[in-house]
Image 1: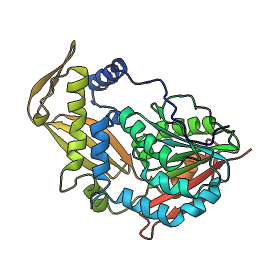
Image 2: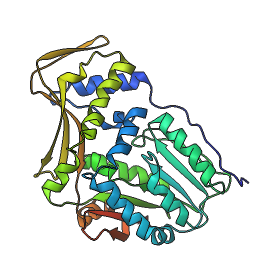
Image 3: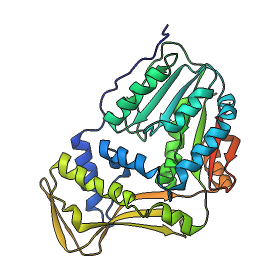
Image 4: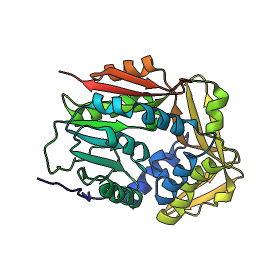
Length: 323
């Protein structure tokens, strides 16, 4: 039985071969894409932390305000003796509020692809919460991964998925991810998730086109990462950041736009870009509570509680997996 925090070092699941194959597959498509999970190297994670502090970027401060006000109720709703598993943990800022109000939590399992950032954050949390096993897992949470064993046996598993990250996925992917959460938690488990709600388009658009251009740096950083890790030769200055709202699909679409006709070499692969051609790097879907609850219900998750800010910009929802 463990009375102190533990650091669990998982096998690294993302290597250069997979990074390269994913990038090549995306750039070969007629409508070119890059997986948004590759934003989050160490520099990308730092830039995203900066984005979360911007005046225009309402999701983080709004969700944080909800957590500050309602975390005691959330802790009670999750119940005692849980292993808390966080998808895309980042800096775990909001998680601290939740951990403070969980009843006898057994373990905290942050899951993230940014290895260095993950372990730095986990080490800090291990010092802050010596009574909890802190067990970081470096993995892509959209794929199967193994849960580490805690020093004590948990009563149930609870997934925490904050930050409206679920909005990055298209509808079929959302269903698959929720099915994975159901499989991970099992009967008696639960899901606490943040979703960005539909609202005035100008407010949404400004959040992804900030005046300090931090989001642009974040978007362009993926090109820097490919140059550094994959030996590509992207001239980053020849690409621009574009973020638009697709009203019909209820989502922000983020792109890298080629500012001129250019060619790029990526190992044995060559790609040509026309001036104005775009690479899609991220979607961010905006939901209604009823709409998201209907999706979750189809995989066996029942909405039990909801918490919103006064402006109804954002919602934190708790779902239970019942018999």
